[in-house]
Image 1 (cartoon, rainbow, N blue to C red):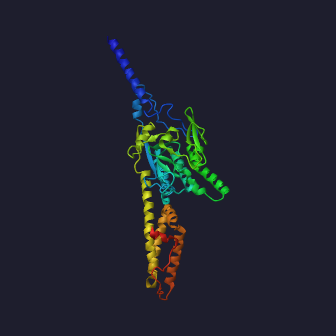
Image 2: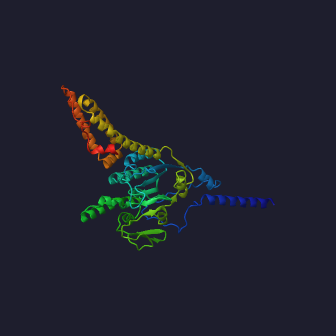
Length: 434
């Protein structure tokens, strides 16, 4: 009887250990079935998986070992914010240089980029304000992207991109990372904007410009492990795109002969993707929550990471401070210009030197903002026709006038002209009307 009880107890204990071990080694519940989603091309980097720690003690269960693993540290980097995601301005190399340094210092396990940058609300750019369109400095953005990748690789972190919205040149950033997810309402489109850079009168020159620029843009996709045919169809209206499935692999074609036709027309249509299309075609790794409170948690769950810590005071703070800073700087410049004009108008008679000095101080403030935020310089030149060179030139002119007045012993001229005759910069005068 005693022997029977011992055998029964041993059998029950063995079953319990088997069940716990099986549960600890099971795949996440969100892992898709073998036929649900094709794999990306073999050129991509391998997906990271949670570390599995083998126990040397047979009496310790796998569940206990996993529970003692160190949580993954997650560093979140916004690329644009809601309604503040202008490519080349809000998303500018200046702030991502700071982020690269911060990543180097903090050495996170995972870096998550959250892209939220849409030039337009309508795909065809009808009725949208051109001043809100992104600006593509290809050299600057390529250098920024390359620097971030080098830093992340150096610290041994895993990079992940979440596309919240990417319409316009920002789509290039979304497709420059192998591990890419999208939110439910996300869009990946708008690369037909390259026509703005290549639309010249001479057909031969236009063709050369187009090929060169398409090659530059497709470099982002190639670095992310995506087929160049995708970028070609997203940028050129005369190109088509379809996909065929070979087992779990997907083969892209620049025609409409594939199983899944993404773009089957050559009549003013470019390829675009919703989150659902991108996931089903294997372009994205999955669809995550668009809610700030649950987005990262959902992402980690889908990647099979059950224990993680979101690093505070990181990229989110740096990006927000930068965006608020350059936009305030632009507003300050716009407010300063009428004050400069007024001072120049009053620069006559006995108050000439006093008001010239005042005007000089205002321009020095504008110049300091331009130097601090390159995005302000871009915007002032784009909207108001006022360049950094013009501000510097006007400052030199004012300094010469003030120096001449200081040396002069004769009484200052009475002027006699109407107020506003003090001169000043011409091209930027439209600032006061904005």
